[in-house]
Length: 241
Image (cartoon, rainbow, N blue to C red; front, side, top):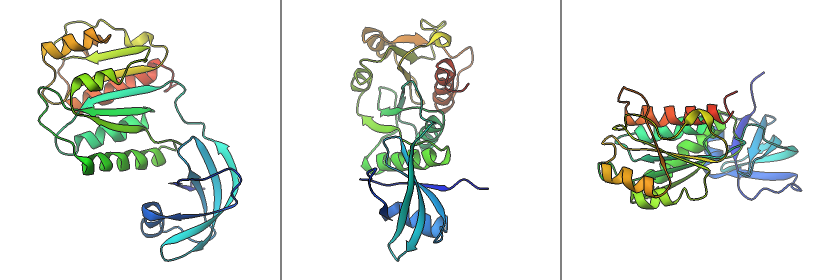
């Protein structure tokens, strides 16, 4: 039996018995997934709740769903993971957002830095949010990671204030100052763009309480490094067990 299709919807409350799904999510349901009347679906309000529903009626621009139950999703991470990554060329940032979402990252910050040659505008940022939304549905999460953009590294690093662990992946480090195998508590990890980081940027990170980490003897592509760091953090925090 296939898993019911999942859709994000705004302004949903526990006492509602009927709700309309419209906009982009409706278009995806009707034209891509070809949801029919009588189908079971799951509606997600972004707070972690999952509403079971039956499609009662499909109209030209919306569908009516009858709510049959509500539960709290069981696949959200117990410990917050915050990924800060440099903007990458092409669609590589989208790949990072997709995989980080699947790995249980709670928040993603994309930033520009000294050696970064890519840029982010509002359209690209909205595209990243859409990628995260689709990835969340695919991996059966109940919430979408928050995605934001920082125009400089300093602002990005300061956004991680309050995290218990703050790790800064740097390709020129010979050894790690932080230990990714013994993480407990909310964790922020930083990975650079294709050009990596300068020594002054590493110094800035250290001044702001980040511990430098090495990812081994081989130089990884930026997108590989970001995904690997997320996976290592998730495993250490018990999210992959």
